Image 1 (cartoon, helix red, strand yellow):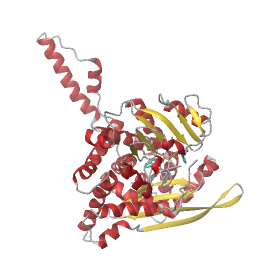
Image 2 (tube, helix red, strand yellow):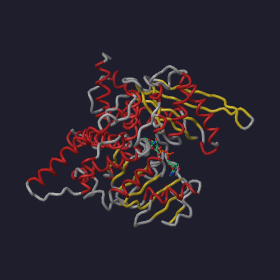
Image 3 (tube, helix red, strand yellow):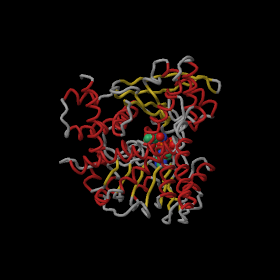
Image 4 (cartoon, helix red, strand yellow):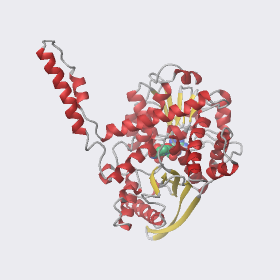
Amino acid sequence: MHMKPMTVEPSFRESVDLMFARAARHLNLTPGLEEKIRVCNSTYTVRFGVRLRGEIKTFTGYRSVHSEHMEPVKGGIRFATSVNQDEVEALAALMTYKCALVEAPFGGSKGGLCIDPREWDEHELEQITRRFAYELIKRDLIHPAQNVPAPDMGTGEREMAWIADQYARMNTTDINAKACVTGKPPHAGGIRGRVEATGRGVQFGLREFFRHPGDVARANLSGTLDGKRIVVQGLGNVGYHAAKFLSEEDGARIIAVAERDGVVVNDKGLDIEALKQHLAANRGSLRGFAGGTYHEDGAAALELACDILIPAAMEGVIHTANAARIRAPLILEAANGPITFGADEILRRKGVVIIPDLFANAGGVTVSYFEWVKNLSHIRFGRMQRRAEEARSRLLVEELERLSADKNLGWTLAADFKQNFLEGSDELALVRSGLDDTMRTAYQSMREVWNHRPGVEDLRVAAYIVAVERVAATYRSKGL
Ligand code: NAD
């Protein structure tokens, strides 16, 4: 169970502002510009009724716009009972900094609906989602040029497809209607690789971290991801894909997974695919999973000895009451805001290296950016080039084979090399390439500041510095 902090801590939004303030101290912003960047521009609250199960049910939703220094603004829509104004404003601010850090040309926004999606069946959820979307669309708070949502906690492809359809129904002549929301299924204008994107970004981000031995040493670790012992909290979209890729492709061992109702532990490494299937078959419960030992206290999993801790569920799970007991030397924030401002200070004093959320989970918005561009260009990535690329590669292979035969050299190209070399890049390959490049470049810009700018103690401050400098530059070039 999620343990509540013992002491009063700043709210999520205050936490984000305090983290911003730590970075702002290193920047030469005028006080006016600093305030302009920090504050949330607007938050729209909507209460709407839907007739369900014979009565009118009222729901409360939000769409917050933190910064419009670039438009459209971008940020997910969350369905959870914890949704409130403070939370969406914190998440919208994080989106501003995240987009700037990974050079996605958007301002920051976030939305949320106060609802437990598990309490409603699919048809009811569709009615609720469409009605919420209607309220936002008629105020241009969902719009291809102004405000483009995406999935977040409790939402996925299905909800995004409903939102896109609702927008299209209300804007029948908008040729760019599909670009009003990202994270759609591929058959409804989505892009390959979006569902896995945030988890894939976690993998690419960690790989890049491990390419810099000096950075790895600052976390008291060495070597590569191979054999590293990882604890993951939350096996939803982000946690599942991250755990799956890291264990199946990088040789890491996922030694514990915590979910709502506890934790399963297996020091030899959990089979993530089997665990995901178990969760699907048991209404999200870990109990009874044969591939590990079950314990009821899920929050205690955060305190297990491991190499890398990946909180991938929700905000505020590492707080001033448990931070001192965290044993991982490296934490990657796959969720948004999993470490409170107070906990961040405790962990920093302990020498824990934290790969911050605005970098670590930016894979989602990065691929959303690709999807938005795809929708605006009305063509699948790779459609024009793929066969041309293959034809060129084939020319080279045939020429090599001809030379070898002519000169009696006896060369034969390895079959798998030939196959890989001959294959032109399809949409998925291009998306992964763009995501990998984005995560590497963003990490490098962050580590440059972390390692070389005097007084910068941690990657979070470095990330904020890079992001806020970019936002400030945009404001300045607008003459503000
Ligand atoms: P999700 O709803 O798919 O998954 C969340 C998972 O966490 C669920 O399996 C849920 O059962 C579990 N969970 C909830 N409370 C828990 C608790 N107290 N302890 C352990 N497990 C718990 O959501 P998601 O899309 O994977 O998002 C997770 C986090 O990642 C959020 O902070 C979100 O803002 C962030 N994020 C998501 C995306 C994305 O593309 N989906 C992108 C960037 C950041």
